[in-house]
Each structure stands twice: as structure tokens, then as C-alpha cells.
Image 1 (cartoon, chains in turn cyan, orange):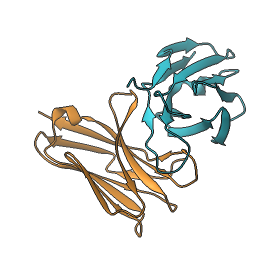
Image 2: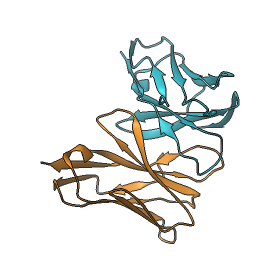
Image 3: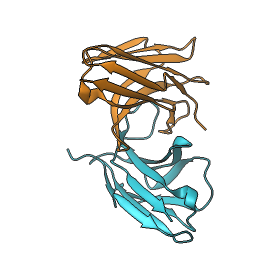
Length: 114
Length: 111
């Protein structure tokens, strides 16, 4: 089975712009979660989608949003980019929603905001 | 904010030695997972241990969980240079797939 794929792998944007990142989960997986990784804050949960609905949200401003499509693919959007949004954005897929399910991560999208 | 603290922050050992990493967390959990990350790439799932389990093995990996002390340890036996990576513990305390990660341990295995 193909793993979790994320596109693009690298992205450079300017402050004030917006960006959309894409994640395709493992075939058959219906839950997608997003995480932000920075040197200062480490790995932080952004949000989780299951059956096209946001099920859980981390402590991030409203500039961070996401959605999930009927084929379980997910996108996240960051509007009005700030320098502090520079990070590795990781998505993880899981079979379903529920505690105790293994989550499989993609390679990440490295976003640099200048 | 992170729930877990990992100890040590960095570890350097010789190939063939064992490596032990510890993770402590603050709230009650359902499960604890360990992940490996190579050079800022994606996370690789290593092992999941449930709150009612005390020990779990997978190949050269051994994980223990002590819920009374809110701590877990990851032991890598007979380490190899390819084990050089950052190791993170992650807990889930809420229903759903939200994981709360520790700060990670950087492991360097010298050949």
C-alpha cells in the first residue's frame, strides 16, 4: 500500500500571502490529522478530520483552516501568512476515529515564510 | 503546549550498545505511541502501548509503561548507525486521534 503523501514538499511564501497544503491518506483510511512542527514549539496538533467533518481542533488562530473531501483527501489552508508560520506541516492518517489507532505520517511540507 | 517531557534530550552511543529513552506525561492517557523522525522528515510509527499494558516488544524495541508514574521508556537494543534519529513519545487522552507529543530525544549512534 502506498503511504501518506503530501504535496508540495517544499514551499516558499511571502508574509501576507495564503497557502494550501494537500494530504492524501493511505487507501482505506478515513481520518486525517494535521500537525505543525517548529524548533521552538515542537509538534503541535492542528486539527483532525473524519468523514469530511472537523472532529477536533488545536489551539491555533482562525487563519489555519482545513477540509476533507469525500475520498478522504484533506487540505489545510493558512491565510495571511506570518513569519512564525514557517514550519514543517505533517499530516497523519488513521483507519477511523478513535483512541488507540495507529497513525501514519506523511513526509511533510516544509513551509518557509519570508 | 506539550504534555510529555523526554529524557535525555540527546543521547550519543556506540553501535551495538543499548539506548534507553524516557517519556513522562501529565494527564491520564488511553494509549502511548513512540515515533522516529529522521532529519526533519515525516514520523515513522514504532510501537503503540495501551494504558492497560505494561510492556511491549517489537523486534529490537522494548517499551514499558507505568501509568502510576505517568512515564514510559523506549529501549533499543544492539543499536545501529541507522537508528540515528529523533524519537518522540505521543499520548492520546481524548477520544479521537489527537496526539500530544513530547519534545523528543535526539539519538546519535556512532559506528
